[in-house]
Each structure stands twice: as C-alpha cells, then as structure tokens.
Amino acid sequence: MLELQDLTCRFGGRVAVDRVSLSVPQGQMVGIIGRSGAGKSTLLRMVNRLTEPTAGAIRHDGVDVTALRGRALRDWRTRCAMIFQQFNLIQRLDVLTNVLVGRLNHRPGVVAALDSLLLRFSPEERAMALDALERFDLAEQALQRAETLSGGQQQRVAIARALLQEPRLLLADEPIASLDPRNARVVMEALRDVNRRDGLTVLVNLHHLDTARRYCDRIVAMAAGRVVFDGMPAALTAREVEAIYGVPEEALEAETAPPADPAVGAVA
Ligand SMILES: Nc1ncnc2c1ncn2[C@@H]1O[C@H](COP(=O)(O)OP(=O)(O)OP(=O)(O)O)[C@@H](O)[C@H]1O
Image (tube, rainbow, N blue to C red):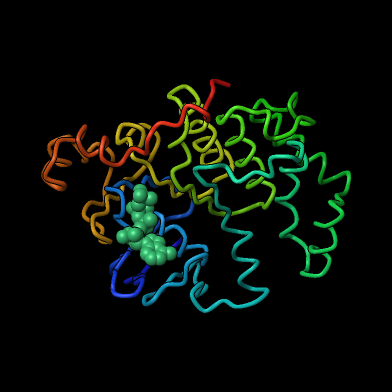
C-alpha cells in the first residue's frame, strides 16, 4: 500500500501540490489528470523523492519514505521506477544496453559507478533484458541504437528498463504525450500488462480522459495542487468533468495537450 498524507510541495511562494492524501493499494492502476500546472508531475516526482516534499508524509508498506536517506533512498528509487514523456534513453547506445541500465541500481554505489562506466552485465542480466524486450515485441531491435526507434518503441524500451529494476511501483509522467494514437495505445497496453501480470502499482499522468477511463482502475483529478476528484472511471462523466473544471472535457484536453511534435512518435 502506498499512502500519501497531506503531501505538499512549495516552490518559493507557489504551492505546486497542496495537502494531497491518497491510499493506493498494491497493484492498482491510477490515472492522474488535470490542467497543465495542476501539480501532477510534482506529485509523481515526490513519490520517488526526485522532488522533496515541503510537508506531509509518504509511506509504502509501512515504511516512511519521506525519512529515507542514502542507500535506503536509492533502494526506494529502485523499487519505484519512473518513465517520462521523452523516454530518457541513451540515444547512442543500443536498445539492449539501455534496458540493462535498469540493473545498475541493484549494486552498491562504487560497484554501480564502475560497472556503469564499463557497462558490465552478467549473462543472467542479459537474459532478463532480452526477455523484457521480447515481451514488448522488441527483441529484433535489441542491437539497434535507441535513436533509430520510433517514439512508441522507445517508450516500450523505457518500460523494459524500468522492469529490470524489479520495481513494485511504476510512475509514468505523461508517457504517451509525444505519441500518435496507435503508439499511445501500444504503450498503454504495455503499462496495463505490467500492472496486471507483474502486479505493479502504476501511477500515470494523462491528459486524455478516455485513455484514463479505458486503462485505469481509478482516476484522480487535480486542480491547483489539490485532489478534486478521486473515484472509479465510470464516475468521471463528461458532466462531472465540466462541473469540476468549468469547461467541457474537449476544452480541458485541448488545454492540457502538449503541442504536436512531428519529429517523435512515428508509427512502430
Ligand atoms: N522546479 C520547479 N521550480 C519552480 N516551480 C515549479 C517547479 N516544478 C513545477 N513548478 C510549478 O509547480 C506547479 C505544478 O507543476 P507540475 O509540473 O507539477 O504540473 P503538471 O500538472 O504536471 O503540469 P504539466 O501537465 O504542464 O506537466 C506549476 O505552477 C509549475 O510552474
């Protein structure tokens, strides 16, 4: 169980996340929606402590995540993998090595630093990485440079890399915002698959409400840092969206969608 209690983040005078409390059972897939600037990314980044909370608490299976330091904090970040809108792969490295990077967190600091410099991995780790790639239909691309892949393929490589961390949670910050609809579907299916088959808790920031409704068990809507809706997808009707945000659903989505980037997201 992941528990956020009155979680707050301020940047100077601006409150990005304002006393958010949520309990997320292990294995739930939660879609987080809201306008640009509502605090969705900050919320996810606080969960794995990329951004430090100003106040409040994060607990996971009874462990006070907000208090973790040093090695314990690195271990938490390993258990709590994150993927990003822009995939964050090492473009000039091959796909297999990119996936193997997910293993580096499993080693003590100095060994990890040395191994990451030399990119040394065991046969078992290579087999794990190949299995993960096969699962997402990418085994054939294993030796290609990451930069030669489409956006949808790159995001699936990022999910495979995350899986090599053997996490309990997957945080996905607008993972499909740069993808065309077909690639977006493939990536959402991959997230749903790791949620269902591996039992990972998935927290995913999305701006298409229908995507959230289709794939998530639960939807949390944010506005100005606060949770303004938390419930089953079926309860977030178009009427409810308009009542919460004061604009029709399409207008909200148009506001939150990033500008289209024709350079990324070619069909896989
Ligand atoms: N590092 C930072 N320093 C200062 N202000 C920040 C920082 N990160 C976020 N903010 C501010 O915090 C608020 C919430 O931002 P956040 O990125 O969490 O929102 P979001 O809902 O994810 O938006 P988007 O959908 O545009 O990514 C915004 O007002 C933003 O400008």
